[in-house]
Amino acid sequence: MKQVWLSSPFRTLWEGRDPFEQVDLLQGEVFRRVASRKTIRFAVNGGHYFAKIHYGVGWLEILKNLLHLKLPVLGAQNEWSALQRLSQIGVHTITPVAFGRMGSNPARMRSFLITEELTGTTSIEDLCAAWASQPPAFRLRKALTEQIASMVRQMHAHGINHRDCYLCHFHLDTSSGLRAGEARQEPAEPDKLRLYVIDLHRAQIRRRTPRRWLIKDLAGLYFSAMDFGITRTDRLRFIRAYEQRPLHQVFQERTRFWRRVEQTAIALHTKLGPQETLVDKAGR
Image 1 (cartoon, helix red, strand yellow):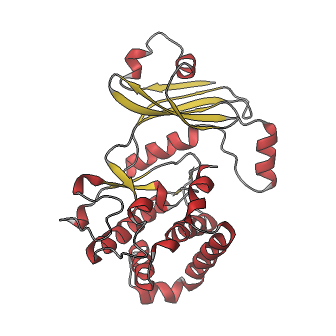
Image 2: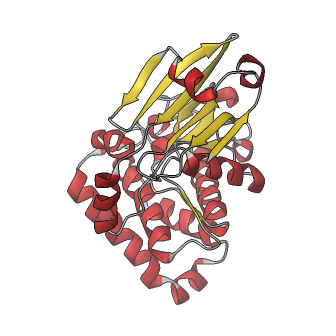
Image 3: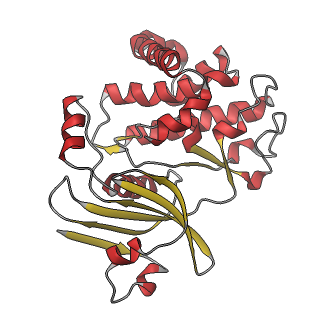
């Protein structure tokens, strides 16, 4: 089985060539390299791109995941499917320009995904880094909380769960003038902030997102915000925006659900410790 999709500029550059051979020839900055995959940043025709290249995880990794009741990530297909679905439902994310998958043996399947580099953005994790000691302007705090809640709700409502749902994987377009490390800044139109969700290589897509994965995503997000001085008001504002109904209705019907989200987040924070461990956790 072989599947290849190419967009500009790779449709022209690789015409008549084997895309899998061409991907292996790419030269650039290596961002991550493990036994089964690598991620590199490279330049073509003046543009910058990221390539995630998967070489097959092996039966041992597949069995290990299954024994822990986890679905193994076999290649680039997860992220490719998630990017397509997000585009369909209007959630901003990175732009794919090339995808390929080859082989029927799940342990040895080869695949790749090339995306445009996301430029002119900062991660919400970096943006919020100083919030614990320097609280942000109210309108910015409110807008970011509500917009992230809305994005996650939209993903979950359409059967997508991220599995690495942390603030570092949400990016803000800095054309509004916002910059990381400047806590008291405030955009002219906070309701028009443009957010992106990235790093979807472990994402899952179903007709309906199971409750346990809703909890895991929401708990991951809460955990990643714990060290940034978030308040009870922030948490309630997030819940209201995610649920899209008054809080008294939410807690009449969903108290157990949100209590479980909080318990899971606290347990994760206790296990992993402060924020500096988050990027390593998210990348595995």
